[in-house]
Structure formats: C-alpha cells, structure tokens
Amino acid sequence: MKIKQKLVYAGLLASAFTFATAIAVAQEHGEGHGEAPAPAAQGHEGAAPAGHEPADHEAAGGHEAAAHGEHGGHHGPESINWFDFGDKKKPAFLALVINFGVLAGLYYVIGKKPITEGLKQRRVTIGKNIEEAQAMLAEAKERAKKYQGDLANADADAEAARAALVASGTGDADRALRDAEEKAVRMKRDAERLVEQERRQLQQDLTVETVELAVAEANKILERSVTADDHARLANDLLAELSRRPAARSSVGGAS
Image (cartoon, rainbow, N blue to C red; front, top):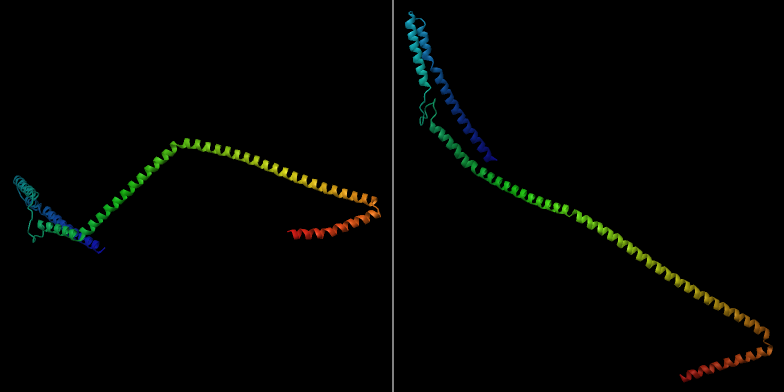
C-alpha cells in the first residue's frame, strides 16, 4: 500500500509540473498576440490629426502594411529554448526531458516490481480461468454426448423396459400359480392324513367298544350258566396257577 501511495504522489507531482509548464507556454503565446497590434494602433492614431487626406491615406496604408508585416513576422516559427533554464517565458526543452526522465525513473524504481507482479498474477489468474473454462467446456461436451446417446437409445431402452415388465409379470403369475398348486397339494395331503387319523381312531374306538360289549355279554352269560361247583373249580385252578408261577420264575432265574 505504501509503494502504491508513493507512486500516486510521484505521478501527481509530475503531472502538476507538466501542467504548470504548459500554462507558462500558453501565457507566453498570449502575450505575443497582445503586443503585436500596437504598431498598427499607433499608426492609425498618428494618421487622425493630419491635414492633407492623400498624404494621410498613403501614410495610413504604409503603417497598415508595416503592422501586417510585423504581425506576420510574429506568427512565424519561433526559436526553441534548448538549455536556458533562466528564461521564464520559454521553459528549456532539457527541463521537460529531465522531468520525463525523473517520472520514468520513479516508475522504474517504485512501480516496476508491484506492476510486474500484478501483471504476472493477472496472467496466472487469466490462465487459470481459461483452464477452468476449458475443463467446463470439455465436461459439457461429454455430458452432451451422453445425453445424445441416451436420446438415441431411448426407444430401445423403453422396449427393453416393457419386455422386462412383461416378463416380470409373467414370471409372477407363473410363480403364483405354482404356489397355489403346491398349497392345494399340501392341503389335500393334510386332509387325507387327518381323515386317516380319524378313521384309525374311530376304528380303535369301535374295536374297544366291541370288546367291552363282548366281555360284558360274556360275563352275563357266565353269570347265568356257571354253578357253585364251577366257581370252586375255577378258584382251585387259579390258586394252582398262582402256585406254579413263582416256581417257574425261580427256574428261569437259575437257568440264567
């Protein structure tokens, strides 16, 4: 920031000096224009009190010619002040050259490095921006190619999607039909098993009930047909049978 301020101050100083020099040159040029008509005015004033008109006209014509000659001489090329620093009306050309050299030196000493670095940084920034723009352009082109490819394959993708949906629906229907058939087979098998179990249970119950009825009828028949002697004989046979069972068990244990 300080270097920039110094550079600005130096530029303002050089500009002010150049502006002052230009004003001085303009004033000198204006003074030259103001002093030129003086001989002509004097010639006109001197011609006014003359007594003889022809002589007066001739004198006036001579004075006007002299005035125009002087005025024309004033507007001719002026000499250039090259080295005279003491002339206040015409600044020395060398002074302007020195001013320019001082300004160029100040720029070189104070402003060269910041300006050069700024230009380098600006160049780097512009290069980065160009690279980013090129990368974005390449990405946009790749995306455009992808979109164009997608648009070109849109019909084929739609047909493939439709076929996939149809195949999926057909597969779901077949799978549902198979599941229903398997479920019906399982239900039929379970029903047959339950029926078989019920049949066996009913058969067993009937068998037990038949046996019980037969035993009951047999008891009734025995009660009606057996006498006291038959009861005594049956009791004796039972006792004999019971007396034989321990002997048979002991004989079986000794043999083992």
